[in-house]
Image 1 (cartoon, rainbow, N blue to C red):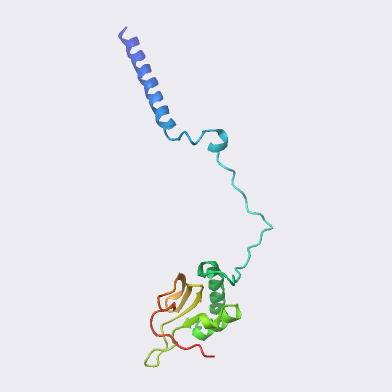
Image 2 (image 1 turned 90 degrees about the vertical axis):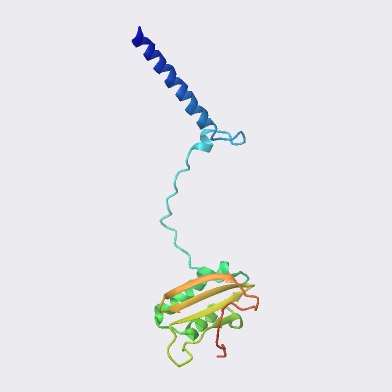
Length: 164
């Protein structure tokens, strides 16, 4: 008899444990979120269309820095593909040709105060109070967006006139 009682007790313990687990799982949903096969089933993964071709980034004339970041990067990388040791004028000229307003740009000198080649050159475009900033040189190429400074400019430090 002792063996049957143990089996019955174990069965009751298992049932109580299952009911407890089910209660915990039921607590994972809220009354506002009905559980149905439609809401719990995972959506099937969509395979990319073999005919889809990636589109090149484009200039957004009325856009801010975030809207134009991909285009800014693609133009800058094209400059470097054609001239790996590109200087500030190379970037500015290509950005102007790509549609950016030269009067809203800044660039740092290509040479140091003692006439040596600068390790890096920075260039920027101010778009509606936000800035696209690029840097190229011994650190490779990097770009980011930021807000304009209180001075209305994008770069800190000495810049050179874009008078060509």
